[in-house]
Length: 115
Length: 119
Image (cartoon, rainbow over all chains, first blue to last red; front, side, top):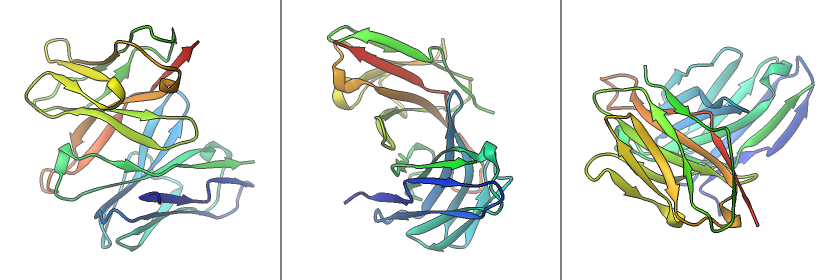
């Protein structure tokens, strides 16, 4: 079984709809992240969470919100989706003890299309 | 702030040929560098990372990278590629966001290089 799972894997929605992307991990890591990937731009950080009570904005948080329901679960919401939020979204995790040197472990991604 | 530049957006190569994927980063006092690979329809996975010590780092699947501080580069190499190496490769640098956060590992990614291996 995969250590980091994301649901759904693909989603098509319409402008203005609310949508939630979910991430679960079985690695026991404290830190979780949401990124979006756009062609030619690499990955950009949306939000990150050190633990259940600690959530922080990344470089492109506008239009997004998150919820850390448990150590293992981190959800990303688009309150009112717009077409330029069409992208590939990745969840990732890492240990809290690793600091700057630690590896991040990525889920398989969710491909979101906003029409 | 740190930044990462991957000089080639696409690299086509024939099977069994050598390949080099180039990565340059902006200078910093302490730098930690990573190469991640993304196979089609999959998430990213770590190929290798440089933390300190030997400047030649060996990773999985026969890849290696060399840290060059004077040229601020961290190029990825493989002496003989296979069809299965076809993927997108991302160079990343670790940047400390907050000195009080226990060294939070914020990764700054390059735009990616698409390696296409042809028979």
